[in-house]
Image (tube, rainbow, N blue to C red; front, side, top):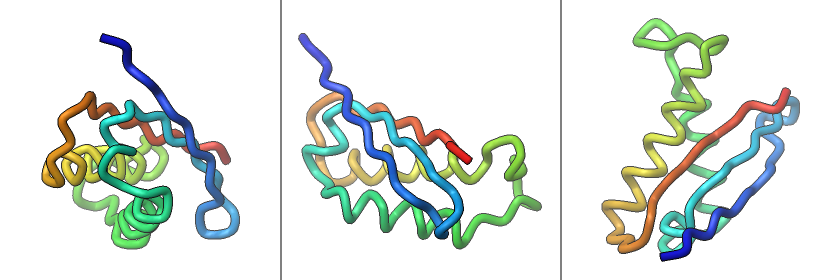
Length: 88
């Protein structure tokens, strides 16, 4: 079995960049636009008083978990690994 990992770099809120490292299981069921929209949704709704702070990467961890869960719900039958990394 060979795992394909993709990357996506996007501007977030016009001043944050993030990189997205994923296995192909995510891309089998979601488009780039859907992924970006979901990450932005998590960032907009993030409340650090309910867990890990911004400085500790809480919003990015939340985005990775949400994307992984969404790919699973959509029935991805391939590896679903997601890592969202702040770049600024």
